[in-house]
Every structure is written in C-alpha cells, then in structure tokens.
Length: 307
Ligand SMILES: [Mg+2]
Image 1: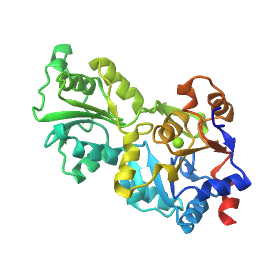
Image 2 (image 1 turned 120 degrees about the horizontal axis):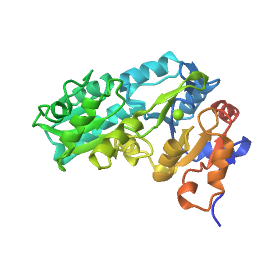
Image 3 (image 1 turned 180 degrees about the vertical axis):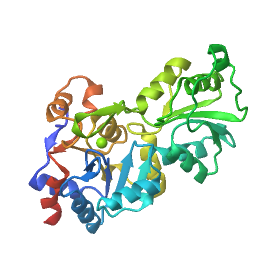
Image 4 (image 1 turned 180 degrees about the horizontal axis):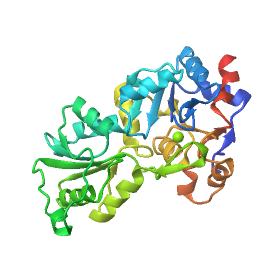
C-alpha cells in the first residue's frame, strides 16, 4: 500500500520530522512572507531551527534579485540570513552556464533584468540584450537585425521590457541547434496582495518555446538543478532534508523530484482541498504533487521547536 500523503503535522509528528532532518529548504513568498509582510512566527521558526543545528536555505524561483538583494530582504524582514544560503534562479543560471562545457567562453543573449546581468557579471560571463528594445520598421527589419556571432546561449528570465523584437532575436539565435536555451522558471503568475497578479516568467519562456519549437532547460523549481546547487555547495543528504513550500507544482514537486521530505504550508497559493485531491489521486504524476505533510502556517512549527 502507498504511504499516506498530506498528513497534518502536529505535536509528536512534528518532533519526529524535525529529528529526522538536518536541512530545511524554504520557499519564501507565501511561506515566510506575503509581499513585504512577514508571516507571524516565521523568523522565530528560522531562528530556532538554527539553534537546533539545522541548516536553513532559501530556495526561490525569483530571478529579479541577486543573492545579496535577497539576503538583504530576508534581514530587513527579521530573518537571520547570509547570501550564501540563498539559491535564486538568477544566481543558479550563472552557475549552470559556468558548468556547461559547450557554453565555454560564450556570450548570452539575455532576456532578463538587472539581477540576472549582475549574477552573470559576477562569474565573468558576457551578455547582450538587457533593457528596453522596442520594435522599429517592418517585419523584414525585425528578422534581419544584426546578431552577435559570439552568442552561444539564450537566457529567458523575468523581463519587464520583453518585446516583440526580443522574441524575434531569441528566435534568430535559437535557429542554431547548438545555441543553448535556458529559462529561469516556469511560474505562470506572480501573485500580488489583494488577490491581484501579473504574468510570470513562464509566459515569456512559453512565447520563445512556441516561436522556436524547442523546450527550454529550466533552472528553477521543480527542476532538480536548483537543488543540485545546494548539494554541490553544502553536500546535503536528501534523506535528511525537508522542503517547505506553498506551491505544489514547484516546491512540492521539487521535493518529490529530489527525494526530499515535503511540507506544504497553507498561507500561499494552494488550498488543502487541492493538496488532498493530489494525495488521493490514482495518477502517479498527480501523486507526486502531494506533500508528505501540511501545516496551516509556518508558525505551527513553533511549539515543537520550543519544546
Ligand atoms: Mg511561494
């Protein structure tokens, strides 16, 4: 019989889970904070985990912040954190390009913002493309824009200046099957306060994928690569690691893909009914989206940590 999934974490079970792990991976938005407001008890949970000698990491699909900026945000919101504990998709994209042999010495055509440029700068990778790039002339002008012959990869991240011309340039570069195609993350929406949202990076990646009829290599959750970045730096053991997140198709699926324990917190985008329906599903793919455990809010871990 399959192991039960989506079990409410309370009392002794929480103690048992905490004893069984050395590393806690946190998604941030919807777990530790909402926008610019920390969730009650979250910073105390992080503090007490450290006191119990657990290593804490912040694993985020956000490509608009460098490691430094993310650590600053964490500190500003009352969390003790250093940049080395932050694994965001801007930083991990730079790590990916550094380790891919076929990219060696190449340039990036970057559809992305300042954080991606800065992370590429840090590892000495040059790039073209950031900033506004409005269309001009007619279609034949767009299709014959000069290309940089040194470009060996197209990277697509969050880019508020995404334009038809950028899409056309990506198409031109990616016609070469040897040109790498990398997307930071496939999140379709960025939830804002008050139930509002804006389109996420996944929409930009899908636009390029559709134009070039190729699939991007994805860096962020649920892709294993972002977890591998934590492993290669800190050597964490998946059997002693838990992923805490609020999204099934990114956070929880990352945990399933990497054989981690998983905890869903209900302060973000997922309802208990959705999680339970995945746990009860006969479809193996849907079951992979079901967390091992759930909590109403991160603060529910406090009693077990204070004990
Ligand atoms: Mg989240």
